[in-house]
Length: 285
Length: 186
Image: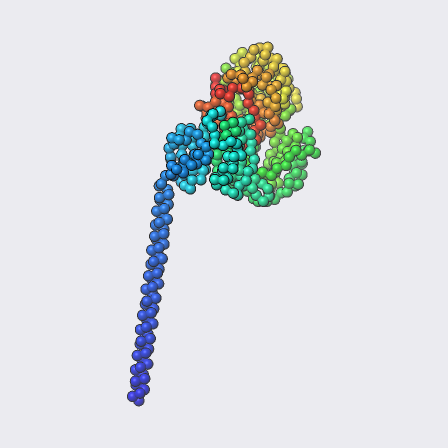
């Protein structure tokens, strides 16, 4: 009987000790969880604070003279030595009376406008347009995903150059990339702009063969004198509707088109909807 | 000092003429427009009479063309470079601003010579297309030229041309003869 009582007391004691240890351990874990939670929270807050500090710092700090001067030198910009810096939204405009350079917070060049005499005699650091394009790629002013697209002559003394996104379908999108004008007489960049206005579909709904049939039909219907047996050129392009007198009224901004050229006219067909957008007549007599 | 925009009634050329009138007006000329449809009084006669000079110093034409002719769609209006040359030289007319907004009018020197304008001329400007040109291309160019002349007070005309070509973002087979250092303003 006595033994049974002792055993019972012992069991109660062991149970109490077990409960106490469990409670202690639970309380320790809880503290640790709370403690680590607090640390995480504090870390997050600190991180946020740091980020916002960095943001404030980035937004408030002007770009350094050293880096601006490097851009001025890379682009061989004349007359930007006594410049002012103004903030435009999140970008910086470096300018004087006649010249402008717009950069973002990471020193990416967004645009350049340079008023230079057509026959400026001061020597350029570039010998040719090709050398200037090479610099743009070498010094990472242009991302590798862009490729040389085309250049249009400006009178007999310069070019409008497009370095654009090229899709698998072979189409170049001049509204995604870089466009600049270059004076070949004095080898200077006159204007430069980064563009990200339109993302084209990779593959058009319409094939070039289908577009050709539509173009021939449209040309024959509207201009009976057009010789449709002779197709001079076929091209798949992204165009801005503002380029076309009739389309500019519609208000839609960009189109992926097939441009089929005949002797007397060119037919512009929407590469996705098959719509004949415009028939462009040549002004030859 | 007068300037006149001649144009054919088709292919939206009245719009081109309107923009070119704007260009001449901004350069300081008193301007008007005339539609040409035939070789009779309202067409070729009016064109050649205007060429005789008096107080006329600026002229533009928007329509069909080649390196030696200007014409309308069916050819009922047709003027040749030799006819123009004859009138200009016989009347000692001085042409300060000429833009023949038609295909191939500057493919060679024939038209510029007809108006007595060359790269050695002082305070004279001749503009033309050196290749075939589409309606939309010429439309966009003359619209932009009008816009650029309006906002570029301090520049010479050649620099304004640069700006207009650049802004159109298209292949402009346009060419220039005359004085590159002149503002074009009278």
